[in-house]
Amino acid sequence: MSRDPQTSTDGDVRTQDAALIWLMVHTMRPHWRPLLVALILLLATALLNVVPPYLMQQAIDGPIAAGDVSGVLPLAILYGVAALLMFAFQYAYTYYLQKAGQRALADLRTRMFEHIMKQSQSFFGKMPTGDLVTRLTSDIDTINALLSSSSVTILVEGVTLIAIVIVMFAVNWQLALLAVIVLPVLAMVTRFFRVRIRASSTGERTALARTSAFLNEHLHGMTVVQLFGHQAAAAKEFDTFNWNYRQALLSLRRHSAYFLATQEVLAAVGLALVLYGGGQGVLAGWATLGTLVAFIQYTERAFQPVLRLGEQYNAVQIALGAAERVQRMLLSEPSVPEPAQPLELPRVRGAVELRHVAFSYVADEPVLRDVSLTIPAGQSVAVVGATGAGKSSLVGLLARFYDPQQGKILLDGVNIRQLSLNNLRRAVAVVPQDPVCLPGSIAFNIRLYRDDISDAEVKRAAEQANAAHFIEQLPGGYAYELAPGGANISVGQRQLLALARALALSPEGVLVLDEATSSIDTEAEALIQEALARILRTRTSVVIAHRLSTIRNADRIIVMHRGQIVEDGDHETLLLRNGYYARLHRHQLAARSET
Image (spheres, rainbow, N blue to C red):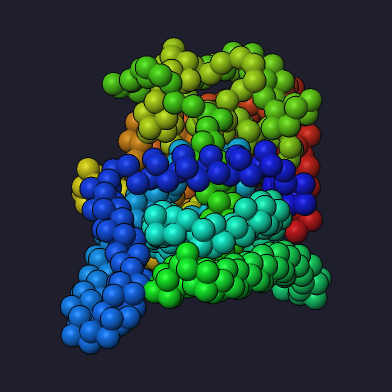
């Protein structure tokens, strides 16, 4: 749940600070060697930064004051050498810091993607796709900006500031006091703006995520928007998201502008104090002209880091908000956890049992109520019922996309919570109502990252699913490249491909079809029915059906109503009972005759 940016507190600030520290330590730890080299070079650069003003002081108070022109040459050469060394060290530490940072961020992106892949279906139901994309791209890019630019500036300027202050007090403590007298005021100003900029940056990230989520959802659903002529309403709703994002950005820029302007004024005041006090010191004899010139440079160099740190403050605050969002993502635990010591099923027979299963997506709104069901190995079971009866929820529980709040589900006598998710989902293959195709070849979409599945096994699965005929007619056959979502093949062909995938990835065990023929043409349905008649003779199957004509030959038909099993029997038996199934059957026959 997103937080209102206007309600951010110091507790939120501390949370984000801890989030950034936690994330940076865990992300950078494997890449400590180039990071250590960068830090050593950075320290050397900061120390070299105090050398030029010191050489300037020595030249003015020494050979220049004595009129010895030749004595200036060695100091000038040292000045040039110091400048060249600073350039070389800056290049070197930037390179090593970038090397460590980019490797770490690549690892972080992979960690986040792998972590998202481990999440349960309930997570994806609550988290908009656009928000996930924002965290994987924009938030990581924001942290990248911190590592590649802001962190360099902060580290270099921070160490430089400390070194300059130490040297100033060593050279002349009176002038040093004049130079740093405004720093406490600057610290209070920074503290004042800290919470405001942090709150604004959090609001900006939240508004961006919401805008991205809206865009992603509506671009994917553009066909529906256009079909019903809702473009104007969608544009108006987007304008609201866009306006909120603009206001969040304006708030962030306004606070940043105030902060930077205040810093500039305080830096000018500090330099004026040094110039006035140093001038008085030269006249009074407790400071030399060289010391004053050096202190003017020291003061400029001292406030230069402060000003640069202020310029980076906005980026740091945004990065802190992004780091918190990334950390929360990485710390989120799947609602369906892997067992600590998983059991393995070496061979799956396919016997399924549900014992007093109760399930709900939302508390106090049950979807399944005390469901008990036994399916012997090799039996084909059809599940029918009106929309909302709990059929698809039953599928989700069998594949363990969700866990029931009460009861348990057994596969071959083993509680499925004791099986690893990979083992379970190879034993329970699901063909969804809306098949998904990924960009890639037909063969890739069937084996789906399983390199251990041979080309021969891919072809055999396609033949079993009655998909081989249309695949072999495509240019390139199994090498034919699918467009995103499988847009260059028909819905029926995508469903045949999904069935072939299920057979290839799970050659034995339980086959579950979640209304797999509800939205395809008659020809594709006939091909699927022919394939199923052949496949289901040898394995357990659970077929969620909307069209009763497709499940007449099932061994059993389970009728669900309001989350409970109300009837159980074969087609003829249920018709003779003249109950709920018979009414559904008569209703569909009447609807078909009207068409």
